Amino acid sequence: MPENKMTAVESKLASVMQKFVGKTGGLISALRQVQDQIGYLPQEAVSVGADAFNLSRAEVKGVISFYSDFHGAPKGRTVVRLCAAEACQAVGGRELQAGVEKKYALKMGETSASKDIALERVFCLGLCSCAPAAMVGDRLVGRADLERIATAVESHAEERK
Ligand code: FES
Image (tube, rainbow, N blue to C red):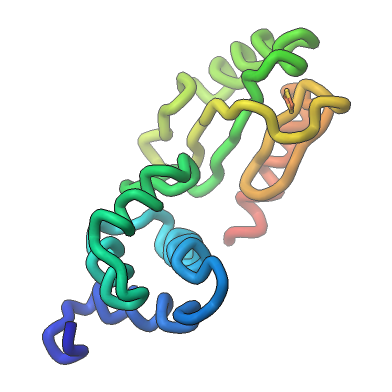
């Protein structure tokens, strides 16, 4: 797509993605970068990504839908991911989930109306020996309890100011 025919959003996406063209795993890195900067993948990411990496739109959509980490709508600024896999469930994961849902008045998969926080369920964070495990933003929390999660949420919110 010629640069002068792009919308402002497409131009921004193109400039972010261009840095990853020709690199191994470039499309995924480019999509991650876009999501980090904007908070989600706008629908224009498909066409801009396809043009930048010389792929079909279906191929780009396939990559986006394969990785559950990519999302097409804004999420909470702080995403709390709780592990729902076996090792974590065996040592209080369910109770922890119930406590977190109550504390933030959200159910798994929901985002607060203020967009400050979102809760997500994940299946194994590779931290089974320190179960129950959680991830707040990009920070892993082992032996997670309500207090440790709340502390991580506060420091993540602080870092993003
Ligand atoms: S089962 Fe929860 S981190 Fe592996």
